[in-house]
Length: 259
Image 1 (cartoon, rainbow, N blue to C red):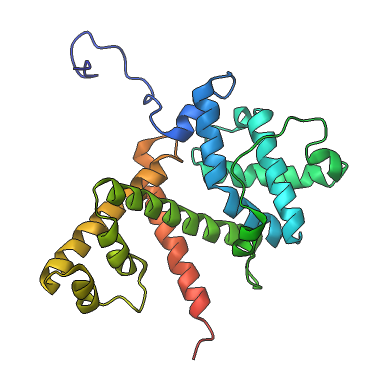
Image 2: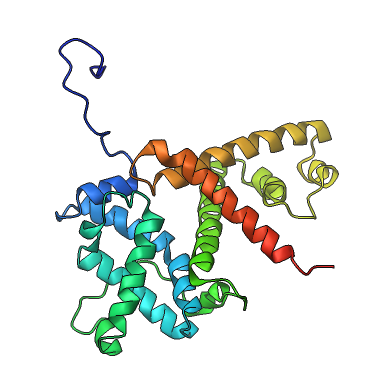
């Protein structure tokens, strides 16, 4: 058992050992650690949609935004820009937003073609295919690029958490149940306990219990997804509260003007 900080002879208290994916990246940003690079590439893949949405909202076409997004992440990974993250940028989303702002400012001062990989090794970060890019086209609105970025970030986090939950359900041999109960998690109007009970051949009461359990598992998956993107696990609660606030504001804005 690890020695407690409060026990006699224990070393003086120190900063928490980095246990999140982002903290591992920050701690190893000035090294060639394969683990840190893999963690960073995984984070960049996850955060492709919000960065692309931000660049699109800055006035670039879908194709140009895709090129710039890829070039941005290639720079983050290859040039070690993570090493310039200030200590107060303990959240990966905050670091990325600051970094992409600077990237676009620099982009205006350099030849665009050179910035899109000329002379640099190709870096694959799992960018969406051309057929999928339409999903990331933001609707016309008066929202700022920062607001669009936050909204797409929140939706991306929810999507990744849902993927985690689906994988857990598949591992447990409960994929059919997950498919039947997923509408209750996403708030779809088609969600019906009676219909789900018929599909799963269960009593309606049993389905309600299963939905309750699935929601709790989704909550854990959501917290795990957020934990990957903060320096200190203690920040997860604040990040979750922020995510819920972003979603609440997004829902309020989208409902304005509705009959």
